[in-house]
Length: 222
Length: 388
Image (cartoon, rainbow over all chains, first blue to last red; front, top):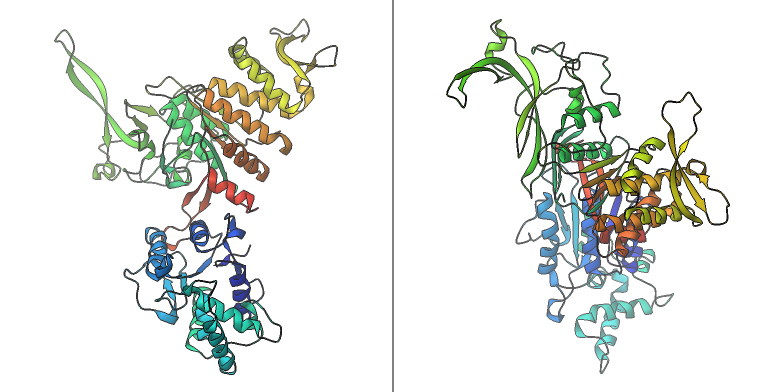
């Protein structure tokens, strides 16, 4: 385990961020990207990630972890998920007592991502709540917003296709997940994971969302 | 049971706060991270500042030997004393107000040890018969008192020890009093019984002494059970006199064990360190009944394959005998065995503390403890994450 750690929700996100970190110039394994299960949680997902995040925060004190970032989905409040604000508040509850300057209510950081300084001189902490650090949603929303220009037509068709289904099996708030999966299903190698968006250069590196996330990673893992 | 622990200005602890202790506590950390110092602090706490305990602790590290005179260059009239080793940087503090403090804030129970300068003066008091009597009294002198720069006074130094129940002066001149050595606490008002089990093995005589207290009690059954962890064929244990020849004044006693298919008993010492260690641990648990047991390097002499069973027995007896256990270890196997045993044993709370040094700019180098409940510890060992 290297000391720079990026905690994410699951294996798909792990592969995605490992690819993104390589693309923006980090060496392989320079930063450990891992889902909660790798750190001893009984499962993956946001709840487990925030649970494990607390362990990792404690490991900053004696330098076992030297840099720490957390990426989770805001999820959808209207469908019973935490949503952006409650997700932020859950994380804030862990950070404030440990001396991090966490603003309440959250500042409107958008695609800059959250970076919190520590009053006791511990390393900064990075928090990114997908997709925009202010609205409900998922990493897939971020992916759709970051699609390369050459992919726009395919993405539009994927949206149309998903929209046109009668009697959808998935609930409405998973619309972006369905669109992203459809988009990925129509690639040269159909059905790749989120990581293939990076590997196959399907994202617009100059989009505000892509640049924002990359810069945030650079600020967290300085 | 000690609920929480605050240690200030003791050895390498500037300020250590452990808000919640378990009934059985395992302490890990790198070398010189404070594991043994914690056990020492607990001995002092349990003995309520008992002078014999303080001397014993210094003797364990040969800190009662004298090499130098650390206060020689200070303004305060220097006095060599091995007690300085208890203070941060192995020096008596230059100012008042930085006493060693070891306490359980949840129970308002503490020991405070302060290095003070004092002068003696006679005071007059009335005795029971109404007669005026004069007696010598110690009057503290502040370390920053301007009087110290004049030749008017030449104060002495001593430790002033306070507990919830009393306070007293302890002379620190190494030559001034006879030091008793003791591994068993007690004596001071409010003292908690405690037993310290060092890393080295006890002598056969010490084992025999502990055995005498346990023999013919319920302890005997558990001792046999403990030995069977190491060697399942053991069916009996006894201490017998060893013939040292006619010139020997006292007969030495040694432990012998009976094995199932062996016609005659075998000396315990010939059966490996594991046997001696489990015997030592279990006898100590009985000696510490209702108090605390301090075990330095639990795994000593114990093969990894038997550590889980050893912990099972320790946890069980800790509950049965109301003993609060504090053990240190370097061994990953020992941590895993402890974790598995304490999760399995639902009647008892196991906790692990890892000592580390802070990297935060504001208190860099301060020793602190990361707390792992048995649940958190189990999760991490399951995921094969190193907690040492």
